[in-house]
Structures are given as structure tokens and as C-alpha cells.
Length: 150
Image (cartoon, rainbow, N blue to C red; front, side, top):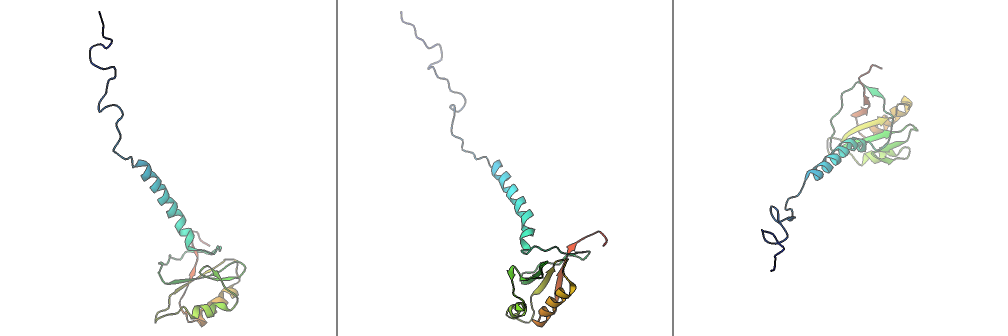
């Protein structure tokens, strides 16, 4: 007498549901969204730091912030009195020459002046005089916004 080893229901391997381990056709996007949000936060924090290329210790003021414009020229004077046009260091007396070629059209671009707080006022006034000689009559002084009284 021969006895069969399988009992009852067929083969020795049982399948559950859709056939065991079927390939997933869905993509989990949650980790991707998490990484993108972290990158967004990093860029939001670092973007304002990229706007000012030359590090200076600006004086405090209660003035309202200015609107950013596309055609804007930034002149910076660091603590040693070195003058920078945007991020490029200039030799003494070179500012007037460089700005003379930038003035195009009837309306000159906005000039913002960033000066370190330890500078002598005479040095800042001399750079403002060079800006005036180059034809820029409207100059905005950049400061840190502060709510505390001086």
C-alpha cells in the first residue's frame, strides 16, 4: 500500500494573497519629500548670507529696510578702509573710473554703501565724494536694523 505524503490540499508550498513576494509597483516618495524640505530650509537660511560678499560690521539703526533692485551697485568699505565694488577690491582712486563706465541711460542704478562701524567718518565721506564725482547723487547707507535704542 502506498501512501501519499501530501495531506489534503495539493502541493507542499502554500501561496498567500497575490502569490508571496510580488514586485511592488508603487514608489514611496516620503523620503524624497523630507530631503527636499531640508534642502529648501538650508537654501532659505544661506541665501541672505550670500548677498553680502565682503564681511563688515555694520552700525545699528532703526531705519526701515530698502527694497532690493535688479540694477544695484554695492560699494563696501571694510575696517581697514579698503574699498570694494560689489566683491572686487579696488585700488585707491579707482572707484571713480570704474563707476564712470557703469552709468547707462538717463536713470543711474541705485548705489548702496556698506561701511564698517569702526571707520572714521572722513573716510566714508571721501568715498561718498568719489561716488558723487562719478555722477551718483543718490546713495543709500546700509545698516543693521535694530529695535533697541542706541
